[in-house]
Length: 401
Image (cartoon, rainbow, N blue to C red; front, side, top):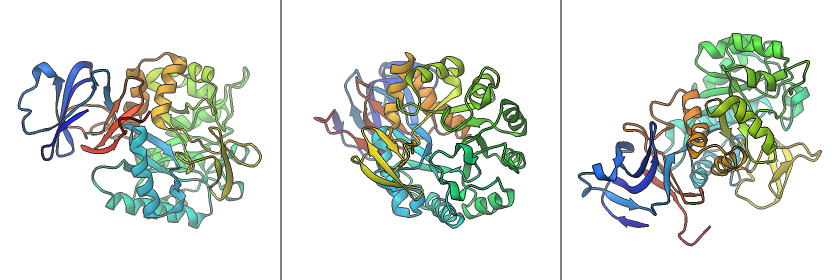
């Protein structure tokens, strides 16, 4: 890689670009003031003298930054730590896997612990640095409004029925930054909360739920348009009861998260989901916990001891407790498991989450006027470099894998 230093302007040059409307061979991207100001083929390039030029091998490719709408932690930090340092650690670590923005995701816990995490994340979003790190786009409230029958790693003692008044209090504490709520619509108060979320532009997601297809249908009518980690901790498909998984396949209204680590969902089931939902209907997530990027050992998730060994994170009874998946690897796995194109995988990792969060005007694709959130993948589709809002946030050492 060659770099010629200029001030405040960056030019990516001679690279394959997956833009929002086409794939550009031997292309360029001009960046100024955190935004993309030009994109096209090198043949069309003019006025490059005032730019810091970043030139990478022709076999490398530029894709939009990945957006993780469901992540609890990484590199020893967890959203529930409720500290500025924890979110800074996450924002600094995530560009290494190509993630340029994310939803800080909570877990079922005591009310005061959830509130501390919400207050902290809301304050962090106001003060977070403008560039050079992954951006916290909002909060994903996972629990405590879930079904104990499908708790998974959600701590049972703190699960409660959906409570609209409590949610309003939490949204106020968070400075109105809760963007997505995972809940069980069949629980008492569920539909009332869903209607409120819909009216206020907050994503209502079905997750940790034992809902029947009929109950999912009612929830969709009320405003649900999202499914949390498909197949995991939900009523599965049965030939006499389609369940939540069946509804996820049958209803186009639903965008569907999926954890593509080969552990949470069998590769063939990932392919089944892809064949049914296509690239337009799936959103790649990690659901990762603090052990990601760390060694095998014992870790905490929601006050519970988690054992991490050989790519799996489990509670003492063997229940899966989040993942240690990197979103860049999820993209690569998706291509391996389904045979989809990189273009399709990018749709699932960048475009769809941006559209679902209603931020596609500035995130999710490479286009003039959008934030310069850019990931450079090498010839093996591994993350080589990440720019967060126009600033280099990660660059792999030349001699590393």
